[in-house]
Structures are given as structure tokens and as C-alpha cells.
Image 1 (cartoon, rainbow, N blue to C red):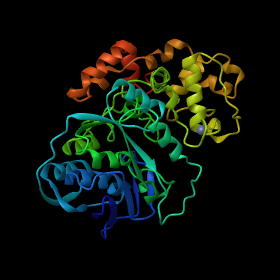
Image 2: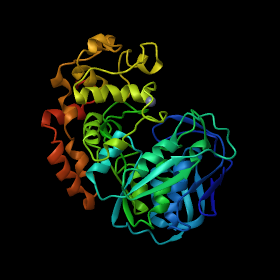
Image 3: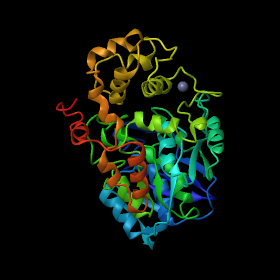
Length: 406
Ligand SMILES: [Zn+2]
């Protein structure tokens, strides 16, 4: 793989003979390449070469088989992290490594999880990634209202940098999106010198970090390759002097929802990518988050969606599936759930509240893995607003998906 940056941040890449246009993201999901160029705007003209290298790697990693050649020399430490973590020869080598900056920024999407992360660090600046169309790829996703999310981010009153990028259109399949989940940080990486960043906070919560949720495994994953500090991406970001920080990595989506709705940013919370004046109430994300919100607010489910909707149907089948812990949480707490479309799912779970009380507390190892400069602030916030899991609740996390847990 040969990587070239031109202008402020125009990325193009050329595959080597052994590379392929099909590959797998770090969560093992199969993906296919659409086009070999993209751009990022809203970033400075210059940054440390390791930052350019990691930003590019978030886009080209799935296609690269044996080596990656950057257009500017990287540090030996970064080359080593690429070699050890991804099995690729990376070069040329010749730069001094980047020293971490002093500040933590939040990679801010506006969803409940990232609002909760932001609430833990009231002084942290935001970097918001805004999808824009690619000049050479037809936009078949005009219903995706990234402009609405960017406007909401601007209303938070926080120090905010919005970067616009078409990098999601480098993916042909399954749909436009991040080639690696970390591509959402491409702009923040290029801003790290200018903003003096040493850490980047993401809104990944307990399910994503520890339970193998989303597109991933569905079992306890302390060595999660995407988000563990000792995983390959964690070590790569650290080598570039920008630590991955998961402020809400120890709490469930019930807790992030509660924190987000109780935060000063409440009016700007938006997890739906389709609605304009509010959430669309018709998409899968809206349904899932409405269940969690209703559970947190202890009120009946308020959704127009029917059992035939694919996003409802998926919760009517037998587990396992990603996010099932939150479905169980919702089923056990939403009043009148037996009279809703989700009634058939009640058969699959223990819906006694005790069975899901662990989802109201923080998994302590998640705080321990927050880098030292930012740990105390997170721990104090958790102590005041959430509380730590008991030993038996910790066991629920650590036996998740093994058949020995809930
Ligand atoms: Zn929606």
C-alpha cells in the first residue's frame, strides 16, 4: 500500500500487488473498497508525520496485506506498532516520535454515549466528524442528515472543531461508513498538534468495550483489538502520542442515557441520523434508544414501529445478538412492556430487575485503563453519579457470553 497526502488533507492510496479490494475491519466484519481517495477538511496544513500515518491507516488497513509506504518518514515506534499489531512492514522510518500533548478532546457525535463522555469532562474540547458527499461516488444515502448533527454540535457551547470528510465513501460494502471504526478520529488525529492533544475520548460504552457488542463477538473481550489500550489500535494511537480514552467504557447504555438526559447538553442529544427537527422515530436506532430511554425514565414505550419492521423483528428472535443486555434491561423496566411489540421477547430473558442491576453501575477495570492524566476526573464523576459494580456484578461482565452468566 502506498499512501500520499496532498494539499491540506487529500488522501490517496495505491494498492500493492498483494493487496486486495476486499478485506475485514478489525471487528472482522467483511467490507469492500469503492475508491482510493478521500479528503478531510477543517484540519491544519501540517502535523506530525505519525499523525498523518495513523489517520491514513484508519482508511487503508483493511486492504493492506504486507507493507505500507507513507509519503513522509514516520517514527521507529510507530513502525513497530504497525508491525506488531497488524503484521505489516511500515516506512520509511526517520522521524522522532510525537510527544503526547496535554489535553483530552472528545470525539463528539452528539449521541447519548458521546454526550455522557463529554459530561464527564466539562472542559474538554470537541472534535466532530461530519460526513460529506464524495465528488466521485454517487450519494445513495441522502437521508443521512450529518448536517443536522453538525448544527447540534455547534449549539453545545463547547470549544468545537468540525472536520468534514468523504472518507466513508471509500467503502462500497456493506454501505458508506468507516473502513475501521477509528476512521472517525482521522480529523482529530490531524488536529492533535494544533489542539495540544494527548488523548482522544470516544463514547464507546461497556457493550462495545467489554461485551463484544455491535458487529462483534458477543462475549467478554478484555483484549478487544479495537478499544483495549493494549490492543493493536490502542498501542498504535499511543505510539502517535494520542491515547484512546473511553470515559464511559465501564458503564452501559442505560447509564450513558441517564447521564446524557441529565446533562447540560440534553437539548443537543441526538442519536438518530435521519431526523431533521427531532429523531425520526422510524429507524432501528430510534427504536433501540427509545426502549432504553423508556426504561431509564420508567415510562411506557412510545414508538409507532410495528413487529414487521426489520429493526423490531431482530429483537423478537432468540439471543445472542449485539446489544441484547440492553434489550433485557428495557424488558425488565419498561412499564406495560407485555402489551407492546416486544412482548414475545419476554420469553427469552430473566426480566427480574436483579438480573440487570449490574447495568446501572460501573465496571472498575474500565476506570483503571483510563490514562493517568484523565483518570481521577472520571473516577470522581463515576463515584458521584454512578457507583461501582459489586463483585457479583463484575462477574456478570466477566462471564458474559460464556453461558455461565445471566
Ligand atoms: Zn431515527
